[in-house]
Length: 95
Length: 359
Image (cartoon, rainbow over all chains, first blue to last red):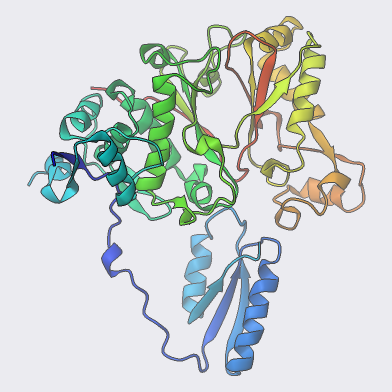
């Protein structure tokens, strides 16, 4: 079968091979930030998940933060703040 | 290896079947396509695109969300060829992509949202004529090679460089047909006002590209009115749309794309472009009672004065944008009594950029 050489059109993501996140070793005493995006039901969804986690892991501490807009990336300063404070971040929307 | 040769490196290339039908199937299998047949991005074709610009083919001009992949002229050229884009149109594609990477365009939001938004590319100035673009009858499509393939190239870049594919990265609930291709040229020769890019600070004889995060065009049919207030009244009613993002993200823009006959009638009433913007700002409004508890009400991004009135004035008529200049007016199309309005994503700002330097 005759072949043609073509330039791969996919973008290359720098560091994609080593970007896996290390899993948290146990949840005992961990601090969890709920990052709400401002959409309808986002807070309800996240607090519902938090309540269930709290039942399973009573030692967890929770804090809620909110993005300025559902349609924009989170403010980098907010992400730095959360990185300092949280062991685990939960985010999602309840569309 | 020199930096200029990076795109020629062996691991950047693949072998695909030469037969058109088998090639099409292989491209889809690789996850490079948009569901339509493609042109293979051979070295000769990619080089022809790169020969039209002055930039280094391997220069990283930005990273594209959602994946964060590096964007280089060579990778954009591969997608332009895939789309069937003539080499001469490549500077338009590259200009559009570079504008879309600017933070104020919020490409992250556009790529990932459940909203159907697509980047609309509007081409201005001499390059539109050079490329034989359509700014007259049926300009939004179909049938013109440059219009169709420039828009398709931009979409393929979003999918292949940004890795935003339906259901994976691109979370659009329904999408929209303009996510295949969305490019048009401005009809400056039949416009009663100065070319749009002049309003954005560029010279009339400069070739330029506007990018705008947009919904599909919403038609404005008016065969009855032949004066500014009558015609713009119909436009205002089409702009005042409780289901579009703009009504709660009023920091964005809405485009008012007048057909030349409508534009001529409006101008014959003595209206300048600024008059059109002011009149529509005053009249394209919705009562608060129609905005409350709909759409993105709980996440609305309104200025303080709008929120203050929201407490106790259900009859207060709210604007769809924060200021008249956010209603962007230009002329596209041929004979007939149709215009359109194009709502936006809301959390995005259109950009008009001069064409990248050509070789």
